[in-house]
Amino acid sequence: MELYYVVSNVTDEEMQEHYDNFFEDVFVECEDKYGEIEEMNVCDNLGDHLVGNVYIKFRREEHAEAAVNDLNNRWFGGRPVYAELSPVTDFREACCRQYEMGECTRSGFCNFMHLKPISRELRKYLYSRRSRRHRSRSRSRDHVGTRRTRSPSPRHGHHRGGGGGGGGGRRDRRY
Image (cartoon, rainbow, N blue to C red; front, side):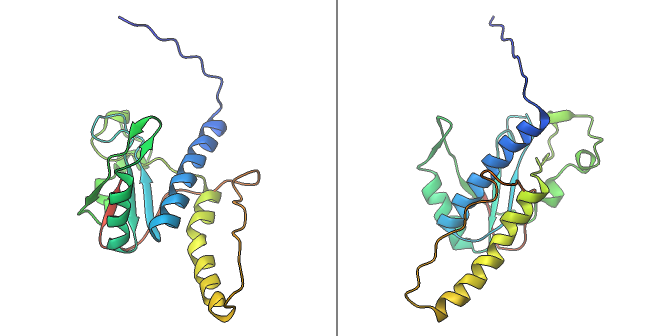
């Protein structure tokens, strides 16, 4: 039998910042590589069938398919990524209502999804990227040959932002 002692001087704010960094990294990379993300959710459950699951809903089905094909050749934290398409397009019914109200008695072992929220600022930043990108695409048609660079993320040294969230699309991406 092995015994582990965990000493943690990490504050709730530091844990949220670490999680927000993870969320932003995955969101931005997937959206930049594969296509517009309508919704991304991360499970906060501890049960074997939900622990570590990330669900990404792309606007277009072909973007989800490209992500699955590419991500199945990736590793994260020294472990392989297992990506698959999901026929589920609306996860609201799979979410634990009691958890959302702060009343789930099953804790992390609940069979319904406990979605880990991101900070409000990150949510606003990530989900407003699409309107900025759409506007810049419209402008870029008028400025052929003009080179544009991406602004630095407000998260790196500035501010952090909001939670998961999303919209339409025909298929969800889980990875």
